[in-house]
Amino acid sequence: MYTDRLLDPSYELFLTEPTRLWTRETLASIRDHIHNDYPSADTTHGQQQWTEGDGACPPVRLCIHRPRSRPTQNPPLPAILYIHGGGFVLGCPEMADGYLAGLADDLKVVVVAVDYRLAPEHPFPAPLEDCYRALTWMRLNSASQGIDEHRIVIMGHSAGGGLAAALALLARDREQRKAAGLVMIYPMLDHRTGSASSTMNNLTTGRLSWSRAANHFCWQCMQGGYEANDERAYLLSPSLAPHLEGLPPSFIGVGALDLFLEENVEFGVKLSRSGVPVEMHVYPGVPHMFDQYPGAVTEQSKNDVRTALEKMLHVAVATEA
Image (cartoon, rainbow, N blue to C red):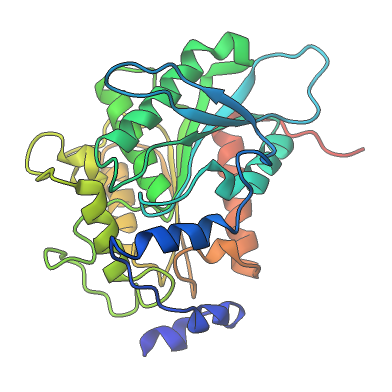
């Protein structure tokens, strides 16, 4: 197999990962297995808040992390709206609890993680609308939450990265103020990937960590009964966006063995062609979710993300005396 030869030796644990069968019958047990590895809403480091609900959208839970120390004058802080991964079908803000608390401390920012509704129980556009409601809440409550509404970055991993891209597009189309930046870490952008309609057939990608079959199943759950054949299709699948003009400065990071490699690179090129400042990193020898495990590439990726966030938010990080 090509992938075995290309895999960074530090990440050989991916070679022994068990293969999961992704079906509607097995989804509950997969959720239980994944969620048991993370803190609960009762033990999170974050503060719980809820947006207001209405007939079209119920209240959305937010998990808010703040820096433990703040400047004496308490000026409004930059903020990150964080969207978790999980293939649209599992996950919660607590998946990244420690990481987000660390970002809040290190960058002196407010991090708002959104607990969006999950497919297949709540297919498109419900998860996206929940994320949009969270962004709107941040802007409307910026004064009371100590947030600088002019310095909000939208960020996400995997499915959360795909939702981050879709949210930036939706905010642009609804004429919301442009975000300060868009950070996508191996984002899930193209609903065709892993299906018979995919135009990408790279034998070195998608063999480890996240498979074509898993991806196809999760996209089917997210798509529900929507045919993705009208003018909204790019809000489901950002790779279909006819143009990306008006998006904020963007960052994309992806492993060279990731199933999403080609759709991510293609999206980065489209951003550039649309006149959007874009920073793109392809990390050699690693598959999807590589940054959940220790290794030199993981450290490089985390440093790249931190540096990009600092630039987007114009954060002056205090150094220890």
